[in-house]
Image (cartoon, rainbow, N blue to C red):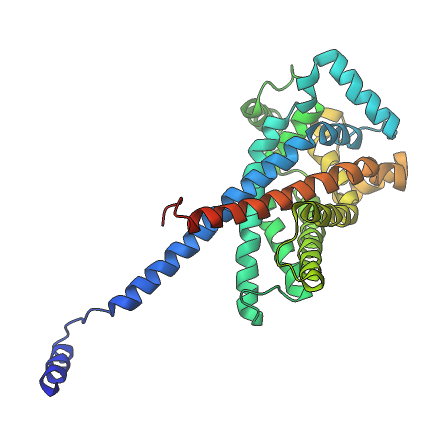
Amino acid sequence: MGTGRQEQRAALTQGEVLPLDSSRQSEGSYEGRKSARSVVNSLFSGALAGAVAKTAVAPLDRTKIIFQVSSARFSAKEAYRLIYRTYLKNGFVSLWRGNSATMVRVIPYAAIQFCAHEQYKGLLGGYYGFQGKVLPPVPRLLAGSMAGTTAAMVTYPLDMVRARMAVTPKEMYSNILHVFVRISREEGLKTLYRGFAPTMLGVIPYAGLSFFTYETLKKSHAERSGRPHPYSYERLAFGACAGLLGQSASYPLDVVRRRMQTAGVTGHTYGTILGTMKEIVSEEGVIRGLYKGLSMNWVKGPIAVGISFTTFDLTQILLKKLHQMGYTAR
């Protein structure tokens, strides 16, 4: 035994590198695979959640944008007439015009947002000593806001393109690539980031309140019912409440960004957030201008957010079960 220790010391003095303990290597490798799998699962679940939710409400979303960027007065009756006229003139599929651009934006946006939220929850949980548990209120709000900001920053030009396709006829832009090319040539590359500031300001309360409300309702439900996982309809209800609060808080900034994004095709020259707000208020008033289409958002928003959160959670649960059963790569 003494001889073995002497040999080990001699090896160290000669500068030889001793092999690491195999158990430590395997433990580190396992943690690395586990972390990578968690990221991939979050990205996939988020992408699917965004795609399903946005496709479900695409006709309502397109109608809302058309009213947001025009000076026409909004009402439920007028919204219905617009949807019906679009259906009669261009067919049922036309109600989803711009949805391909929406998918190109929403899939990476939702994937990044949900994945970032999981990562931020882990980082903040470790920092505040709540690793693996529900975060306290302030970090919970912060994690949602940071996740939304991260996703919006990465995918913003796609949101701009989607808004343009939603409010223009087919003849103007034939496909997503055509929108990018034409905007770049006729209006400059900077136009792709028009409305970026109100988007960032709006996504902080929207994403923060949405994730905060959903996580808070799930935590409260678990404490009162004794069930760690809510039923699907309960998840939908929690998501609907989250969407209602989040979108109501940030709606005026949503109107402002849509006006700024579509200025090139509506004949307006919106330059700044305050300037855009002043012009909207002077022409249309506070309620009819900055809150135009909010009643439709109270229908569309809760449905979309409820479907999104529910799809994400259920997909995460399914992927974990498949892994436990050995159907996914280890």
